[in-house]
Amino acid sequence: MKQGVLLSVLSSVLFAGLYYYSTMLAPLDGGAIFSWRVLLALPALALFISRARGWGEVAAVGRRLRSELRLWLLMSLSAILIGAQLWLFVWAPLHQKGLDVSLGYFLLPLAMVVVGRFVYQERLSRIQWLAVAVALVGVAHEFIRIGSFSWATALVVFGYPPYFMLRRVLRIGSLTTLWFDMLFLIPAALWVLAMQDLSVFELFPAFPRLFGLVPLLGLLSAVALICYFSASRLLPLGLFGLLGYLEPVLLFWVAFLFLHEPISPGEWWTYIPIWLAVMLIVAEGVASLSKEGWTRGKSRETARKKTG
Image (tube, one colour):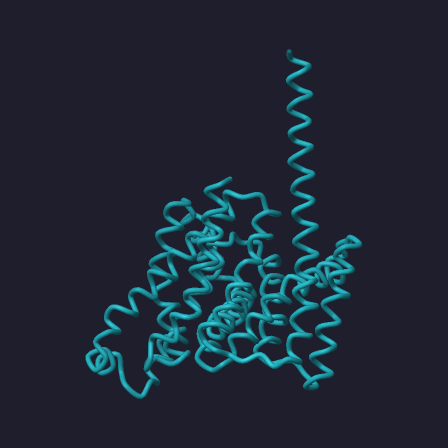
């Protein structure tokens, strides 16, 4: 359990670090950084799939792709959806949109709660309904304040749920899906690099520090990804989900403190209700996990008494 918590926290810290790290890769723009992340993710995924002995599923999906046009279309859509998020993650810090993206990540769990209720007919607890209502106060304030949400926030909130829904439709393992997402994104990554003003062979000699910084980008991305998937295997799903809230908190403070993105006094009344909504969900999750732990402990104690 402790190892899983440590890995989850480390993954969130590394992803937040990548948020800032992209600003150190000038003159690479968001598109080029996205492309390198895609290309350098494949070796890391290959290593992790090998350790998980998942190449059998990868091969099975590859065979299906030879004859199933529908699967080609669905997996292409999956790659487009996740590709947009990967691009936004490295583009936003370079264009003063880091806070907007962090807000999107705060709202995403609440959006998933709403999708679960209205798409999958999942029941919501009173605390979840209250959290959604409180978050809507922040959303309403933002609309009253500027008449809309940032497109970067909207892309996270409305872009991720269809991706997760599509993964349910595909019914393919997480690592295998991510492997094919990256494979399908390779042509786009190569095209973006080819369209740069300076080719790779011109850019790297002109800026020698990129010889070290770009491979380090791949290493950080790989380690963050491996820590994330390792934690998902070691932790109960509820605890893993709760620890996931650490990432948007870190993204917010990276954007606010290190990227110096300003927050006007009026914007705080958008953030505060949404943070309160997240805290309600976290509190409910912690209470649920504590109750489960207490119940398991009570069951063990009862079993010991019976055997004793």
